[in-house]
Length: 84
Image 1 (cartoon, rainbow, N blue to C red):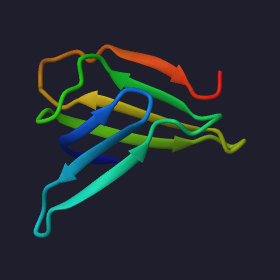
Image 2 (cartoon, rainbow, N blue to C red):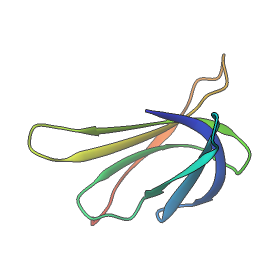
Image 3 (spheres, rainbow, N blue to C red):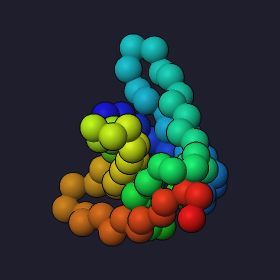
């Protein structure tokens, strides 16, 4: 799980999240890999705080979920399976 601020986001292509800590780092996620499933919060914009979760099931299928981190906000993810 990664929690940080959206640095950049291209729908169906990529997501970069700045992760705070003693040393600030940037995590990049490829949103265009074939055969993977993506659940990304609607209206995602640079500067917003998000939580990113990666999960791989027993058959090796990877799912990436991106949700807004704001308390009291119910995220409305949209599903996208690459390669369809």
